[in-house]
Amino acid sequence: MDRKSFARMDCSVAQCLEVVGEWWSMLVVRDAFLGVTRFDDFQRRLGISRNILNERLNTLVEAGVLIRVPYSEHPPRDDYRLTDKGRDLWPVLTTMRQWGDRYAAPSGPPLRVTHKACGAVTEAVLVCSSCGEHIRARDVEAATSPGHAPALIPQRA
Amino acid sequence: MDRKSFARMDCSVAQCLEVVGEWWSMLVVRDAFLGVTRFDDFQRRLGISRNILNERLNTLVEAGVLIRVPYSEHPPRDDYRLTDKGRDLWPVLTTMRQWGDRYAAPSGPPLRVTHKACGAVTEAVLVCSSCGEHIRARDVEAATSPGHAPALIPQRA
DNA sequence: CACTTGCGTTCTATTATGCAACTCACTATG
DNA sequence: CATAGTGAGTTGCATAATAGAACGCAAGTG
Image (cartoon, rainbow over all chains, first blue to last red; front, side):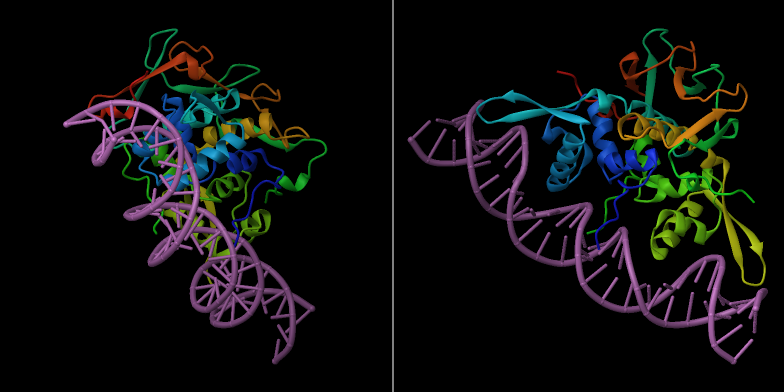
């Protein structure tokens, strides 16, 4: 059976997953953020098989997350670089990393991230764009936007 | 062949993906945040097949993201509810949703999220835990923590 | 007692994945 | 100049994962 696509779902989470939800995709993006650009470097670092890597890179390029930048003419070779759309995945990657740091890093966080502007080792905190207060799940309420099926939100008991 | 596990990787992103990186998992978590608790509700809302849903729910319960709460004795039936560990996935879900809103929501964001405290329709913004400034990828630098392989970060050209 | 609900299991056809070997176009080495 | 090495895929094959449907099964309901 075909794997069911999320593309038709009226949900932005599903749309995001359609692009980076496949096995390996997010780790490819992670390495791209760390500065990896070459096929073989991705392959060695991830331990992914070459055919799968090839497929994922193509998918990410088609999705506009990565872009091919030629670095050699005669054997035609490309770097894979993040686009702006790809760089905008940083919040997703960061929140995932921090969740992993908290719940699945027995010997402490593998990476230490420094905020260049203030020089401190930093964690990214989510705040409200309007009032600047720290926000968590319990602090917000979701409603369907006009033009979208209200069924997106189930009836509470 | 077995799908390669990310569990051994010394990377918190990989650890997070090991738990919620499978196809459907994150959408199950999304629905749990929206208040869905019953097997059949998940199944109907997601259009997922029952065997896969069963597997995903079990995985998420084993991982401590969901917990079973009995609501019926005689036909033994459980609600699936988010644990604290599960609720801490909210930042991941939120950043994913916002990315999807920006890049894959032709008719606008399906959901409108309100910050209860200030009453405004809000977007979650990432700020530095130390100085409170807005942070993006370019604003930070990553280094390996002591006790972790420096190879995590590739050499820059 | 025939339905329906809720949840899980089993079965099967179709994909996806991982691995290894192979191609192709150059580059470096002896 | 022959040979080996590198970078970037492609191809073939065995195995696991997925979707979909059918089946089980225990309470309730009419």
